[in-house]
Length: 387
Image (cartoon, rainbow, N blue to C red):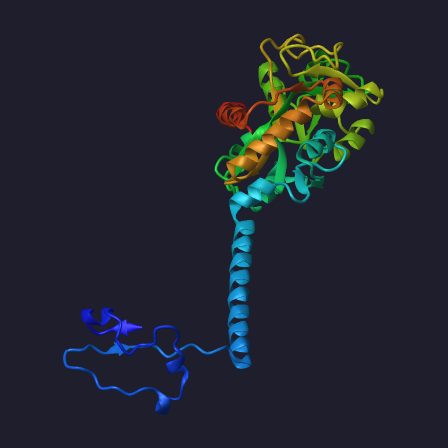
């Protein structure tokens, strides 16, 4: 009810005092009276009437539409929340994680990956799927990692050869190992081992050098990656001899030639070669570390064998695509640390002569930059040409 002036606040003399029954009558039966001079008109709203069935159905439809609109809004909010990076990181991992290995099955890198993968998966509460992609000095595998979505569901195993030497050896790479990959953490370091067939007449580094001096270029050395090639070049330069270098995709291709007498020397990591040495198929004649390797205590260092100061080791680590969220990188690094602290994993790595490293991702990033500079310089000094 609305009033047209302040005077209307007083109750009219004719208004019903107890009920509004007068207003319930038909308009023709309502009491008539004329308005007195100066009296204000009172506007009254008609009395409300009970809802009809039609009114109820209309209001029910309105209520249903309102409820459905609210439900749709809530569902949209939930969907957006589930798709948000923050929610995805909180729920990570929610599916299996692919670990790309830059070696064919059976090599040292593949062995290392399969040693840590189950425990890494346990720490993450997710299954780790091994994806072997050997060849091209690891570039096939690393490119696959670099171009994958940065969501933590694709990671890669790498080592010094592949990540620190890739730009020096392959100037036209389609990816940048620093800008396109994120370091997750170091795993182990390991020396390289010079090995010969158990039937070979070469029984030491000194014997290898004597053969190279007698027949320059006759002694053949097989290698699966760049760092063992660099080790052979360093030995060649230090001793002023000439070797014949033969590249292989991996040990699965090189070992038959070594055992068959078609290859004189094979250079592989201690992780790769320890089982072959223990099995009696090959004989280790020198390690590239500064000290003897605990897994091969009877094998002298190359420095002990007449090349003072000789040292060259490699490290393995895990990488992910660049721009992987920091929370996921931290989660993967923590899981890697847990795997390396596992007694079973530690026992296997110790047996293979690997030195466990671990540590935060920044340690791997620093090692990468340092080795890119140091090994890149050595490659130029010994004259290894980019491919």
